[in-house]
Image (tube, rainbow, N blue to C red; front, side):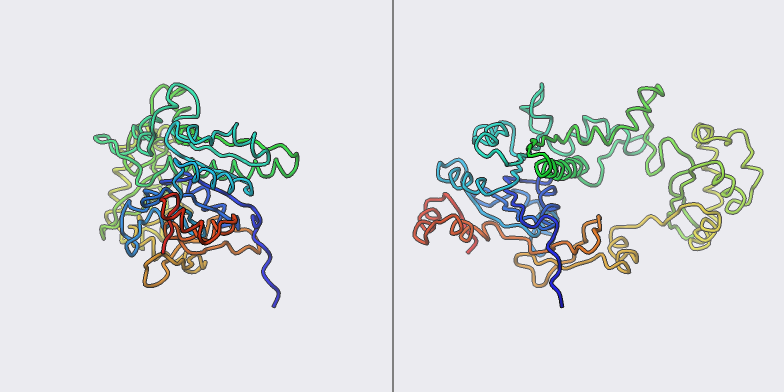
Length: 403
């Protein structure tokens, strides 16, 4: 049987001084595609995201999600020897990623300009909160602060209360743009010989995601209202409760679908030509009256009957799932999207989803999540340190290993 082809990023080495979510998400995606990712963690416990929770057999759910297929080395980068070891790692690396606190990378000599002067072919990727320069460059940033400052909180929630997104959207956005930026920089290096630096901020990544509400507000004159699980600028687009108490979300995108909803689902074809609901903006302006008619009809329908009628009308709809229902979703099961990943201390491998971008003929790497310092000894040995030197570095606290 022939061996599987090498993964697309096999041969690419990434060194990452990373913590929390944004940078680990970017580098995990590189690891999924075959890059060797050396995760440099602090001595005294490693990445603080390891202690966010203990939900996955004692390991943090964030950490398990973001750090499979990596090698972990624990170094004290405040020590000269620790920095020397990092510099040796960078000599053989293609990419360097960091999302340290403001000013920390500069103090450690890890600013992009200095790195490229020493390592001309290295792609440096810097992830910051508010940008590497500018008036807020020295401020710390976390996901919820970016949600606040981009206005996301002001349009998320109900009329009476703003709420945060249930996932770390600013961190995820920054990690995605760092990942695509790194791939672009590697492609540029391969095709032109030029090695661009990559700079991403949480604030500007999420600002990009706020493009539609920003345009709607600037040129429409008012910001989108907070309307809970409904769409702020399209109606009807939101959940309605069936006779069984199950919420079913439907989405009407155009006049054809609106007419089909009225005729097939609501049984009131005359509603389709009611001038209050003739266009999308009309339906939004008269949302309360419109949704009352839809809600009345759904309250008399069983869940399956409602979904069948919506399907007959050609209207996109789905039940509103809980997380446990999502975990058992038939699409994920029948499309074989689950794999198993080993986790430190777990009695058995845990479930993890394949990356969402399928590449033909490529099975992503789903290797273990490392314990802090799990690869310290091997990495130091690969750099030429003898067993005695490694023992001295460990005893001095320059490095830590998981023994």
